[in-house]
Image 1: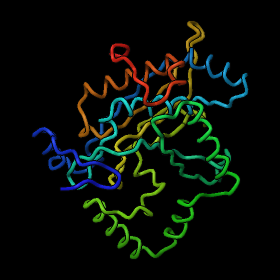
Image 2: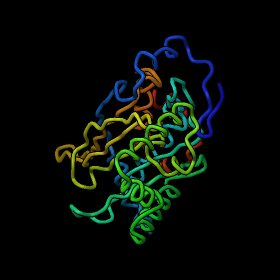
Image 3: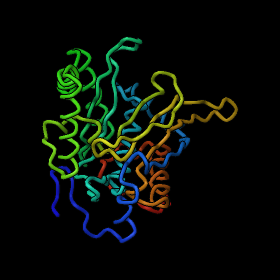
Image 4: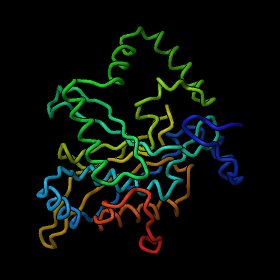
Length: 278
């Protein structure tokens, strides 16, 4: 047994979890999903103030930063299962879809963000805005071009290609040029449904690749009686990578970060006292 290029083999798995991938071998049959509501009242004030000072921070950028910081400090969220084995992913990677324009027929482009431990909200915001602008100006990225080519191949050839890729994935030897930029190989795929004025919803995982989490972000709601702004998010997670206690505590950390926006100015790797989100 050995490590993969994108993950370190976890060798001290307890007996219960070691047999779970044999009982539930597929990611799509191991899903748990929950919708949580996050208080973003103070966060909206922070964004408004920051943008008056010349920034261009979006609510989505803050969610990406909060989630990245949570994954860094709760690293079981960055575990994936492949070939019945558990791996600790080496990087924090987020993926999302960007429409080239808000139109029914507009092309959707898959984006991929590699988050570094020394990044802050400003770094992540600049990176997302820069990548989205680049794609919208050029019309596509390398992954789009690859999919455009592969998608035009005859069905028997496509079936054979994906049969081979799945076998390579089982053994952890998928070539880097196939995985690079593919959201199915990210820590988490986020879908910002609020940007199209939609509610958050359940979204399935995929048996292809290594992505263990899916998050949909809904339209922000304002309670006109209390003045509180609430952001709904629905999480779908591979339950094999951790237990319910671990997931619940991780959600509390996301809530804490979003409710205390000053933490977004800190580096991803900066420590957060555990008693603050217990």
